[in-house]
Image (tube, rainbow, N blue to C red):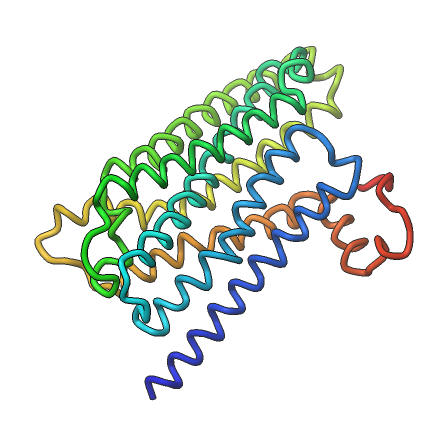
Length: 295
């Protein structure tokens, strides 16, 4: 019976991981291949998709080995490696979303100077800083000595059990994003009644739609990640340790966020749907469609 449950669990998690990889791979190929999509905002989305893709390629298999085998690898080094990938990639995702919110802030609140302020070079610097900071946070928490104990006992929560890690890797960037989007919301409301927006209505609608879509991406991110981080933060205060199955379920909910973003793009972005049709049909292998005008 246990073997059957493990087999079913492995199948479900494998499909989840495969969907995550394929979805984010479509985002990456779309932005890299089609020249129309070579803009700063999409480069930030590309960086987010790379982080989500790595979650599907690296973190999913490692977590599956723990879920199915009850942590077959008992060595503490394995826990540290797993936790570093978990921490680095999750931190990278939230920092990428933070950069995207900053991009949207300039696009909506300072539309006249946006193109000269947020350039491809600036986006590149933001991406570099994002990944560097994420890696440093991961390394810092791993080396701080909180990964102690055997893999079977501590592999799920050893690193993320520190409150400092949760604050710097999640709560602080998430708070910044919420403040930025609240500011964007009020500015957008004011602009709707302005003469300037009536003159350039098409551009305004496109920017507002992009902002709403990315705000939904952030909202889904918070819904997926918040329960896990709240559990980790309040874990030391609990009189009784929560069941490991609950922590594991919340961990998988957090990881599932990496699968959801491409579906959000596909639902809201016509350019992504058009790009996917060309890619999935194999047309990019039969001719040069890089300059194709996407809807």
